[in-house]
Length: 383
Length: 199
Image (tube, rainbow over all chains, first blue to last red; front, side, top):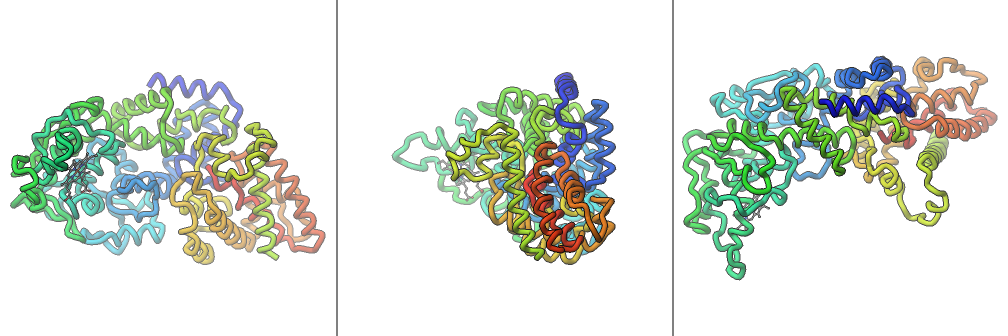
């Protein structure tokens, strides 16, 4: 917090860019749009900036329709970019709408992977668990996301117990990308990418115990390379297979997410002869091996549990979740990844503040927009 | 007439605004001359270490609406938008500033400006002294450039654009081009320009 105030102070001392220029830039970065020429929001923001109160200026911009309909929407959509292509051309869906809703309504983001809450719109055609038409038509008709999003319960629309609802992890969009083909490992891979900002390549570490690696992962993948399983495969699969148990009852059947309490899904026991001594999934228990090796700094505290809901909490209460959210917001506002030491320290400060602010995403946006030098530093030229 | 103006002026403005922003960053002219094959995104990327972005398709739609006062749901705007949406950028990365993005962007600007200049009250939002006869070109251009480029370019850049651009429009005026078309030209020239596209 102190560091942020310090940065604000520095920015308000050196003043080459006018306060209106800064207001316009702050607005544009938050909303991904250029404000109206006679925008009253810009006039109010300008006044705050003249008083050195960048935070109040940012709070004006996050109340604008443009923030919800473009800037925040595109931020939310980036979480559904499973192939990390950087594009935001995919339609709005229940996952991105939920991220927008949690932000708008100041809901604790550390529950975003465990709450029994998702967001839909108050528009027709009505929400369906079997397709995305509801969201697509709302987006195509420019429904105002600031006013038309409403909270609903995941368990009631899916007709399962509230304890089986796990926020974004049990949205149709996440399910379609994670539980359809394959072996539900894609779910862990997606979590790693979207909520920890890491690829499996980056977090693999063969010093982790391989106790949970399942039978389909060849124990001798290549006879000419001894110990390949230990040195390579288990580096990813130790961690991934440890977590994927959480999703043992979830599947996606082409249109709809399915939760079957009665048994572990068949995909958990395929190709058992590849590694006959491998782990056999018998329930939805999971273990969290993040505290081993290269991911030790993730500082995870919840190390085992049952089901997606508790895994979701283990993810969002890890330090790396806050760091990742801060990094994503920074990239959104500054249009670059943090690379220098001071940028990285700045991200850590934002992450701490995010956690101390009850994981409030709107405040994270406001805090970053009012302190990131890419916006507030008047030395950097007009842009 | 409209489309000739449009193409002429847009290219003129894009190159002029680019030139000026480079000068601001003190890039030597001969340095640019030595590397003629570098694309605009490359050059900007070096100058700003990619800390600027390009408006994505919905950002373009909303921004042009914010600037001109023409609603995003305007029928003619919608027709063009649906036509060029896929040409416009799908991410904010500056290296997506391709000819197709420029083309889509220009078509959008033309339609917004065409709809805007059908309404004198919308023109007057930008230039309150707008009149249908004996229009003051320099003031007209000044209003469009300063309002559309607000916060996006320094005053020198804007002034030199206004100066160059006014000369051109004065010519049009002498040839008898009517006020609404002069306003259209001022609008499209300043809207289809780099300072609006990047943020």
